[in-house]
Structures are given as structure tokens and as C-alpha cells.
Amino acid sequence: MAAGLLAARWTIAGIPLPTVDGEGLRALFGSENRVIRTRERVIAVTFNAAWNDAGLEHVLTELARRRAPATFFLTGDFADRLPETVRAITAVGHGLGNHSHSHPRFADVSAAARRHEVRAADRALRAAGAGRALTPFFRFPYSETSPAHIEEVNRLGFADIEFTTDTNGWMGTEGGMSVDRAVRRALDALRPGAILQMHVGASEGRTEVIDAQALPRILDATAARGYRAIDLRTLLTPPDRPPPAAD
Image (cartoon, rainbow, N blue to C red; front, side, top):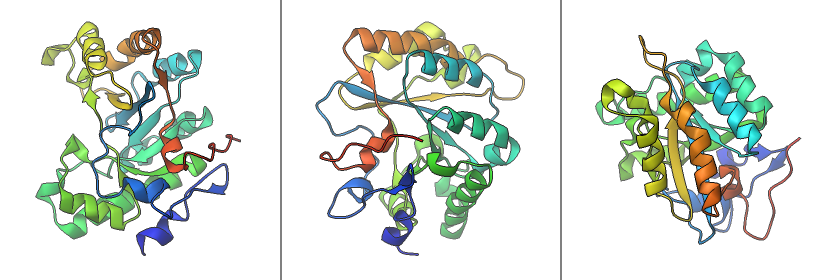
């Protein structure tokens, strides 16, 4: 299916998103999109999830307390195992992105396997009840991109959304990380249009989720510096047209 035809399926609140005349989704094609192109003091808060949903309840609570939107990039395997978690994220208004199905290194698998990873994750998210929260955004596993792989994803109708900085909270204390260091990494990268990558969940044998602990401090500190969090879905709407209100 052609990218333009596939893109036409994506909506917010049932309204088709613009994908023509170089605006909206297509304007994001051909790029890693590691920063939002703006001079406004805004940031996008994003979370990846592949292991489990440890820390998610705290994350959702803190986001709600500050009325801050976020986008969660989930693997298809995560959605298969935890459909109720997918619905919990969407029920409070956050967007969902595609993070592949099984989180492989794309350079190590065939083109057919890469297409399967993207499509299988899309199917899993839809089956889990992602509904209107699902975006045409893809984030590469390990953020390992290449122009050729980005083009493949674009042909499937997805824009690649990477990040300006990763807090590295996923590394845990055994990896030398702490809440203080995660907060500092986020603030050191603060700039108009910064995209912040964090993680929910913990690998086998771990229970701590540093990013969940760091989130309120990050949001409060960025707000104190005059920044506000924006919904990545606003990138799909031309500047002269406000995004539709959520249901």
C-alpha cells in the first residue's frame, strides 16, 4: 500500500490527519526527527516500553498531575502480553507509537523481517485496543537508524521519531545511573523542540524504574525554565489548524 494511502487512515478524534502539500505526516519523512522544528519553548516527553509496565502507574499519575501529554512507543510483544496496559495509557489521553514487534537490531535482519516487525507491531497495538491513540510514528530499536531503513518505514506509512536525548534511566543503578543523573541529562539537553526519551518497565530481576522517579523533577524543572510539554500528535496538524480536541 502506498504511504499516502496508508497515512490517510490515521485520525485524531475521528478527523483525518493532513498528509498533503508537504505538511503533516509527509513533512516528517526522510528524517530521523530528533528535534521538533520550532523556536517555541516546548518539549515532547516520550517513553519506550518493551519489558513490562513497572513504574507506569507512577508515570501516568505524575503526567496527569501536571496535565502533561506524552507518547508511549510500545513493542508489539508488549501489547500482546499487556493489552490492559495499552488501554490504560490510551484511556487517559496519551498517544502511542510503534517500537517494532520484538525489538531486534534492524541491521541484523532482512528487509522482509523489518517490514514484518513494523506491521506486526501495528497489528498488535490495534488488537490491544489502541484505537485513536495510535499514531503513524515509529521509533527504531536501539535508535539504530539508516537512511535506507527510514525510507522503508516511510513506505509503510510511518514517520521515524527518535529523540534529542535519552535520560539513560533504563540502565539502572547497576549501570551507573541515578535519579539525579537522569534529571541532569534531561535538563542538559533542554532546547526548543527537544524530544526526551525515557523508559517504563524493568528488565528481568530488576524492580527499580529510575525514569519514573525522575519524571516529576524533570517536568517541574522544565516548567520552571519556561517550557511546556506538547503532544507529538500536533506535528500532524498544519500550523494554521489547531489539533482537534480529544473525545
